[in-house]
Image 1 (cartoon, rainbow, N blue to C red):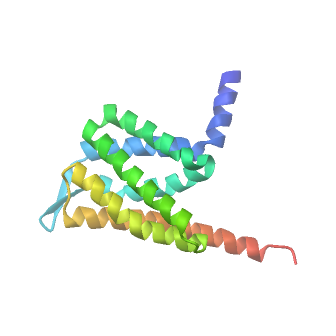
Image 2 (cartoon, rainbow, N blue to C red; image 1 turned 120 degrees about the vertical axis):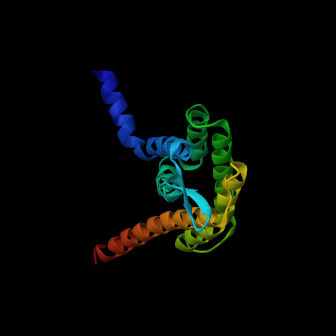
Length: 176
């Protein structure tokens, strides 16, 4: 019974990190097994529409384990290597590392407020890591690139909105 209590406490403490690893694997597997759809003469996958959720969960995982989120990403990539395909796992890891590098540089070297750094980071990293991913898996086209970039930015924008609402509610409820 004690092992279940320990596991439960770990799950509660690291829910976002565990969710991040699971979501990496699920989305990578989805890219392999979900059928492609043709629109405007270009193909895309429903999995292209889910990548934004990864950015949301990654932001929460970063709050839990900080820069060790790269270890969680590598664990997700290793599992994906066996459950999806090696190429997809490599593309996923490469694009995440590119995004993390861009995020780190923007958050480290810009002196803007946190909310502006978050949006700037999303504007810069979303299209670049999308391009890296799609080129490695040989699925680049303007439709897939646009969908993934917009969905990723939308995920980050959602986190930004939640963060702003939380910040404003803390200001409004502060004792006078």
